[in-house]
Length: 462
Image (cartoon, rainbow, N blue to C red; front, side, top):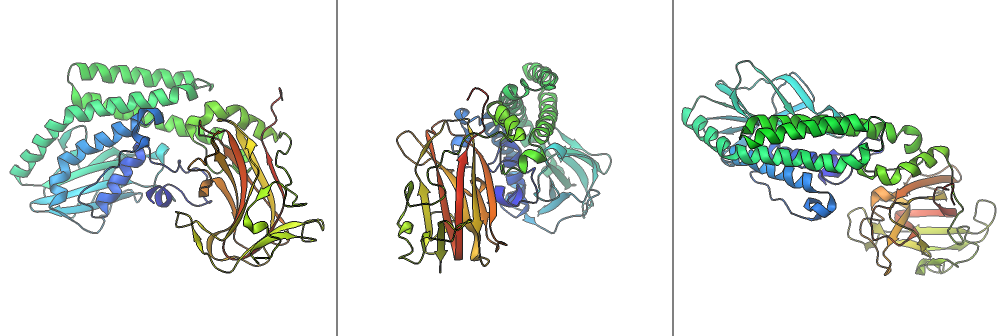
């Protein structure tokens, strides 16, 4: 839910991060939870945190957050959130947490549309109208009293306002206890991000300089760790993570340019560029191989499965003669109420058909396109008619994640005649051995589909 609400979920912003939490997203999730009044956070350690899923940076970031929360947690647990404070930067949320003896302020850098801009996450010289009197301390790699009302931070930050010497002593003691781990986890996160980015930057023109600078920073941070200069090690690592993140998203924007995104790519991870760079170049040339879908023109029901192909005897779907784009057959999908729940709040499906499987491999990029006619706008749905690619293992098992919203093209509004929809899907799972087209309807209404095609870029050797 957090990733959908704060990291994207609308077509107005093409530069949203991927739909699962990485290290930065975890930090934001924690900060938003605290700002909303949560007094504790339970992390579910799933495969996103495992080394095999390139998740070491997430593990280190979650651990760093745990260190920070061990410092401020007792204050949060006995506190109560109040209305946000006024800051000199309107993109920063400042949520006060009042506890006996003082005020804790949670700072969050937000974006224009999706509350996260990873390449613009640095906040300099922020002024906060604290709303209470007292000495002001910033909690981060250091526990330092601010002599001026300005503070600087990356992505999230903490301010403590109090004149209670006992509280200050308690927080300082907790900070000193957590600082070695905080520094080590920051260095570990930088190392993990560098390892993840190396195969990507290595293939780019400016990549060598980016990798060299990040490695220099990592070596410096490790030297500071070795002499137990915890604060300096954490500051160096955090600054290098910020720089690497900015470079990462600069390259992401340049690579996934508007002309590529307009072809229908909804979501492509930065770390997939080594596998997909060649295909992206071919996409820009609009070079495609032959259609590999059998009977996408619906001349008969051959090549398609589903009870919905009962030639309209159910009233929900069927092959309708003369309803196609050029007077040929077309597939009609219709529904009078959503009745089948398939595990996702958006996934009410009343009729769908699935094509025969097509051999495919990990790392390939495929296009599915279809012509759709919706006589009247679909009702009671956020998805309407969907055109999707599903992926399967060699054993024929469906691979989780394929068919999710970001891998579908949808049509809800009425069309003026026939409209072509198009979707580009990179195959991310190493288990993938085959794909299939799925056409479905979700909600109340009807739609017609014709001339469905499934293709992949035409490589010169092919």
